Image (cartoon, rainbow, N blue to C red; front, side, top):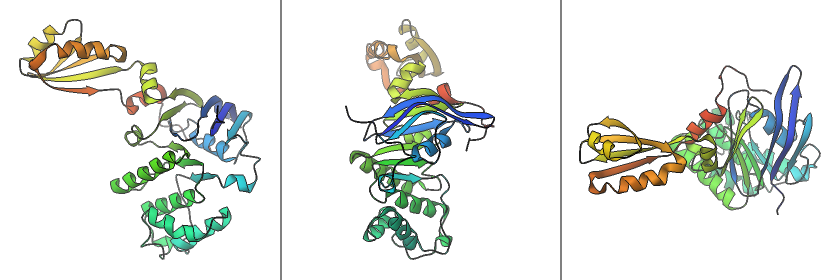
Length: 308
C-alpha cells in the first residue's frame, strides 16, 4: 500500500482554556480531493496549521507525505502548496514581482511565473501593482503562488472567496487537472454546492472532533437521510398515490407527488413507480445533498469562533 499523502493519528491540540482538536484521525491517499467541512470553531484552521507544520499537536501524530511537517527541511516544504482564506501581499509590488518573490523562496524558475499568471487569468494584470487588484484578483494571485513548484499536496482555505462564477469554474478545472496529475488536495469551504461533485471524500469536524469521514455516498448511508422521488403524472396525483402500496407519498399539486424513502429502499421504490407505466410522465430523483449531510453531522451554532 502507498504511504498516505496526509495522515492524522489521534491528534489532540490543546490551547489554554480550550481544546481545538480532540482525537482526530484520518488518512488521505495520494491523488484525491477532500472537502474539509465544519462550523466556525470546529477546528479546521488548527488542522491546516498542523498539516503545514506551523504548530505541533499536543498529542498524536501528523504526517504529510510520510513526514512530520514541523520537522522537515525547506526542500521538502516545496512539495506543499497553501492558499489561506485571506491572502496578504505587498501593495507596491506588481503581480509578476510578487510571484517571482515566492518563486525564489521555493527555488522555482522565474520563467514559470508568467505561465502561472496566465493560468489563473492575470496575464494582462501582471504588470499592475497589487494595490490595484480586486479581492478576486488577489485570490487568483494567491492560487498562482500555491501552485509554484507543482506541489504534491495543496491545502486550500476558502479558495473561491471573491471569485465570480466563471472564475470559480476555471479554479475547479485547475484543481481537477492537479488531482488527475496525482496531487492531493484538502479544500476547506462553506460553499458546499460547489464541492459536491468535485471532491472524492469529506471530513466533517464538529467541536474539534471528526463527526464523519468518507465519500458522499458513504455519508448518505451513515446519515440514513431520505431520498425524495418527485413524480409528474398524467392522472390525478391522489389516485397515483393510492397505487403506490407501502410508499409514503405527499401530494404536491393535483398532478404531482413526492415519494420519500430510505436510501436502501430507493431501487424497490423505483421498480414500483416503473410499474405504473405511462401514468408517470416525469421523474426526478433527489438524493441527500452535501448540505443535507453536513447539517446532519456537523451543524452547530454559528456563534462560536474559529480556533487559531
